[in-house]
Image (cartoon, rainbow, N blue to C red; front, side, top):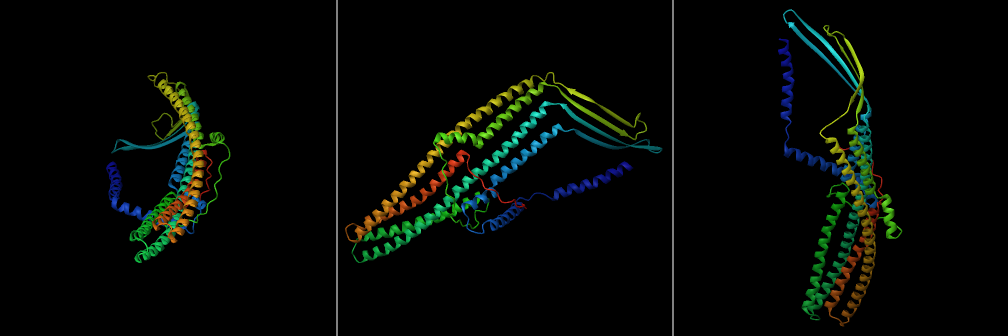
Amino acid sequence: MRSSRSCRSLAIPLLALLLAAGCARFEPTRARQEQTDTFSAHLAERAERELIAPLSLEDCLVIAVSNNYEVRLADLNRQLYRIGKQVAFTAFLPNVAAAAGYNSYAKDPQVTDKRFSSVSLDASMPIFMPSTWFLYMAARHGYATADIAANYVRQGIVLQTTAAYFDLQAQRDTVAALETQLEAARELARRVEGLAEEGMIARWEGDQAIFAAELRETSLNQARRQVTVRRAELLEIMGLSPLAPIDISGEAADPVRPEGAVDELVLQTLEIHPQLAMADRQVVIQDHQVRQAFCNFLPTVNLFSSGSWTGNDLAAHSANWVSGFQGAWTLFDGLANVARYRAAKVERQQSRLERERTFLAVMVGVVAAEAATHDAREAATLAQRAYEVAAAKSADYDAKSGEGLLPLSDALDARADKDLAYVDLVRSRHQERLALANLELAMGLTLTPEPHPPVAEE
């Protein structure tokens, strides 16, 4: 009777739990709408907090290293490795387990019954288990590698933010130039159209001027749309909504080119580059893996102690305590430990080859980035010279066309060449700065700003 009543009392809460779980079923449409509303509100709040004034490059970098999702994921990965290191350390600590029980039985339910309780406490401590030490050392180096990787991710985000910032600034400068050119083209088209109506020039020359103004207007509209795209890309890198309103001030510190010849830059890079530091840690981790695999051939020894207490009158002793040593030694496991040891040695060789490959990749990356800075500088110099020549030619053709010494179409072509040269000049200046920023990242010299204090997520 008592047993059936207890089963019924247990069945009622279990049934209620199952019903509750059935009611809380997943509804995709509602879940998507709730997440959209919540995250949109969160993005709006974040934009309101961050985008309160025109942003300099340094402001954008601080926001990016605080909000960028790659940075935040790298930080979480570092936390996981830190927890893994802490878990590995627990292998050096004693293990203690406690258990308690309550028993009831009746030989004759109508006459008498019997109840008693029992408690046990078990403790063990590794005495000789060298594999735990190598496991812990591998976890320590894994955590250090994750820390270096998180900082390297920040350096990459700094470069991405810098590139997006200068792309947006260049596009805005392009729009400003095209707006000026459009006004000039429209004014010229009106003047040329008047001359064509008076018969002073050919009608097709007037149409050419009108077409030039229409072409400039199309280019301006395309450039304005690209500003929206560049703005959205910058906001996405900063962890903000691509639709948020943002204004940049254009302020940025002048980049400083690292001093020295290319071979000196390469040697400097090999001493400090984060990728090589991570590769070194990986080699050490594989060394510990080999040592850990070798420990499979060694015996292990534990110290243990176990105590139990019971209220059972039938037991010979109500309290029992046992202590001693336990040892285990795998004598033969089908040569699996030998295979694991060989595999660990092969993986260690792989990690060393990976480090050598990274070594060469870092070297060629510095060489290519250093050459790109020279290319960008020369391109900017040529763009400046090309604009000066095109501007002088356009002024000369305008003057000669006004005096009737040259056809008006030649003057329009010269002005179009000048406009294109100016747009190329604007872009080449920003490309030079981006080349220097890319060289800093290739050398591992990119400075990362301190992030904002973390804001509690909902």
